[in-house]
Length: 355
Image (tube, rainbow, N blue to C red):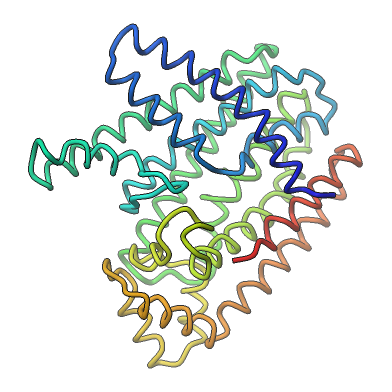
């Protein structure tokens, strides 16, 4: 099975649905305020500039794998997870001070540049951050509206909305852990893995799967079994993302290489290197973490420390173990065999992506 081709086909179909929905929201906004409408058009451009559409794909495939048959309805509902993803990314970009997302300017960077000729740099940055925060909030509301307006039974919609809010809360906890790790610098390997579960596994893998199952009418212990499948897969996905973020290139990751280093992020690679590298190597690594202006030599040195300490190999081994755990749990789920085959291929793809 060519899962990349399957994802690309889904993305093409889904993006048409999402573009029409955003165009309708932009038209609604234009009747009230031109600036808001133009900003939502900018959001639409940023969303459609890249991304795999993994979360809506999981929602749709889980729904269909549990016997759901309303294709148009589930595509409409699946927009909620992509729009809420965009809302969280906009806020995340502000916290991380990233200038690029999917190869285009992040929303706060775009507005800071737009206002740079009208005010000093500090005020322009504040204006860009403030405007981007509000547009993130608007996308959150639009995402919830997409789910609320999907043509499913009222009870299923209410359960799905409740689930979605719970997951956003977990994501917030994970994000707070991530931010605090950058300041206290004491996160252990177990701390980082817990953060990955909250910030990535639940929000990226588990939530879309459960959302699709809820809308298909599935209840009982199935959600717990989905959690047992999704949690290790999501953690492995994040581990692989960290590796690509450090060892990939700007075209691969859609933002400057080394941005995680500049932000002082304590990834699993860093947490492992702190226990595996020599004292001298740890000292050099710690000096680079949080250094906002990194040279190519700085990034190369950081990569060398991670590799020679054995942290990269250990992280890759842990990802493989999590994938094995995930595939074992998948076998217990009442998905169709075709859906299980798709999710097995997807698990391999997500954790074997090349840098």
